[in-house]
Amino acid sequence: MRRKILILISCLITVLLFSCATTPRVQYGSPEQVETVTQEFGSTDLQMIAEKMVNSLLATPLLQSGQRPVLYVHRVKNKTDEHIDTKSVTDKIRVTLLKSGKVRFSAVNEVNDELVKQLEYQTSSGIVDPTTAKQFGRQVGTDYFLYGEITSIKKSSGRVKDVYFKFTMNLVNIETGLIEWADEKEIRKQAKKPLVGG
Image 1 (cartoon, rainbow, N blue to C red):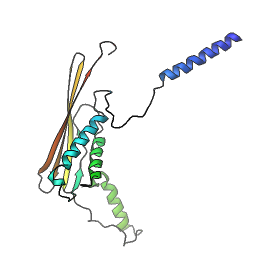
Image 2 (cartoon, rainbow, N blue to C red):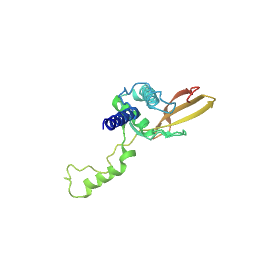
Image 3 (spheres, rainbow, N blue to C red):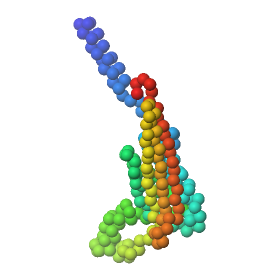
Image 4 (cartoon, rainbow, N blue to C red):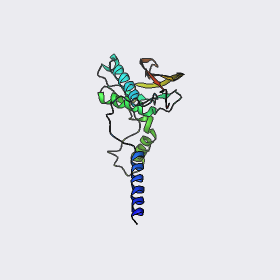
């Protein structure tokens, strides 16, 4: 009987130790903390790109006039060979610019169908009070088109891997077709495999 109890306790301790050893330790970190887990595109890269583009664009004479132009933003194109959530890059730039109070953004690109449905509902359903119903033909036209792309070059030699990212962004005057502003941010990341266990 005593031997069975010892075996049972031993098994229980083994299970507990095994479960503790395989459960990852999770903790919160600062979103601004430099992330260097891998050489792939990461949160630090996203933040550096957004900061560079926003600061550069806000410094242009175009946004110093106090006119608050309306921008149409297109999702950043990913021309790299890895998965990059370009919506996150685009959103970060748009939100930061919007918070500056110097620009306004058109939502037509993202929610055009919903806007049209809501306008049709308000003007044609007979349910909405005509004095409060919003009308077709009142949307504000955009002044500028903001678009960008991210590219990369990867190299490796022996244990060393190198990746170079280049992010380019342009602001185009919709009426004239002229590029009014452009900038780029370059990032280079290098990783070296360990001699043992790599």
